Amino acid sequence: SAAAVLLAFGGGASSVKAETPMTSKERQEKINNIRKNLESYPKVSDQKFWDQKWYGTYFKEENSQEELKNFTEERLKEILDLIEKGATKGDKGETGLAGPVGPAGKAGARGAQ
Image (cartoon, rainbow, N blue to C red; front, top):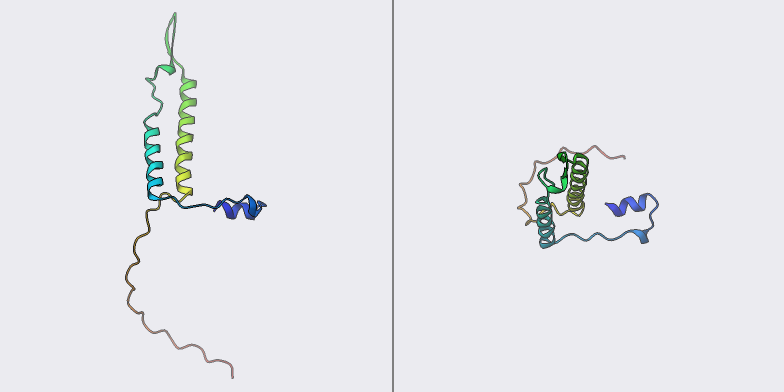
């Protein structure tokens, strides 16, 4: 965890923040927020990537690539944040039934006399 890394590499215990698990509601809100943000994916047809001059219209490729890069990095950071907080894990299920007893093991070696 982040706390273990900080302690191992010189971060004092005072600089370690306790990690609290996310509730199902918080997890779902984060996931819904990422879904909503994905709808704003930069599109080539967006007017901000086009410029009109006296000689015609041209596509501003550098602007498009930069915005696409920033968008992708932000969404990946959001997803990694969810993974680090354990948000991809579902709620803990009920404990299952005990399995059958296994076969008896071999007799151990004779002890010192």
